[in-house]
Every structure is written in structure tokens, then in C-alpha cells.
Image (tube, rainbow, N blue to C red; front, side, top):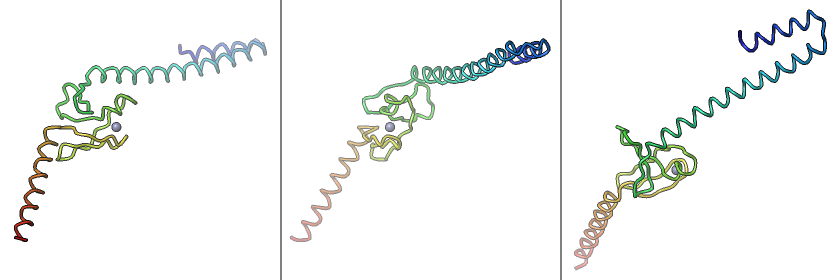
Length: 140
Ligand SMILES: [Zn+2]
């Protein structure tokens, strides 16, 4: 017999016995019991979310760059370390070809791959240097 059915039966008995005070108290108790049931459901949901967050926290891998990855993630996705540290949210960062990134949530930016960023900077400097030497040759 469920909690609700037990109260319903007790209220019926109080009604048949014509005990108004008992009837009123049982109605109050049943309202409190329903509130408690709702609170238990909310707490179960919160507990499940906390367990899930704890499970993820145990798989977080930190890096020299301000990013985190998840152990065993076959997609090798990068997440914002700031969002994880401050809100325990896994926000996938937007990675650029030059090794930099930006978080779409908190707008943190940086390098997700320092070597790729260094190679990009070197290539950019070479291109600028080449342009400069070409324009100097035109004036000679
Ligand atoms: Zn972020």
C-alpha cells in the first residue's frame, strides 16, 4: 500500500467516525507527506547530478594549456578549464587551426596546442619577411 493510499484510507476512517479534528489533522499530514515526497524526488535528482559530476571529475585530465580533457574520450575533445573549475561545466572550446582557442561560454582564450601556435607564428613571420623583401626589391 502506497503512502498516499494509506492516508486516503485513514481519512476515510476518520470521516466515517465523524471525527472532524482527526480528519483535519490527517489532511494536514497528507499535505506534508506530499511535500516530503516532492522533496525526496528533488534530492534524488540532485544526488544523481552530483554523482554524475563526481564521476566526470575523476576522469578530468589537466594540461599545461588552460584546457581539460576526459580520460578515455575517443573523440579527444577539449574543454574550457575555467568553466570546469568555476561551474563544473564541460564546455567544448572552439579550436582554431593556429593552435588558439576561445570558450563560447566564458570567452576565455588561449592556446590549446602551444607547438601548433609556435609553428603558425613562425609561418606568419616568414610570410611577412618574404613580403618585405619583395617590396624592397621593387624599389631597388
Ligand atoms: Zn569557459
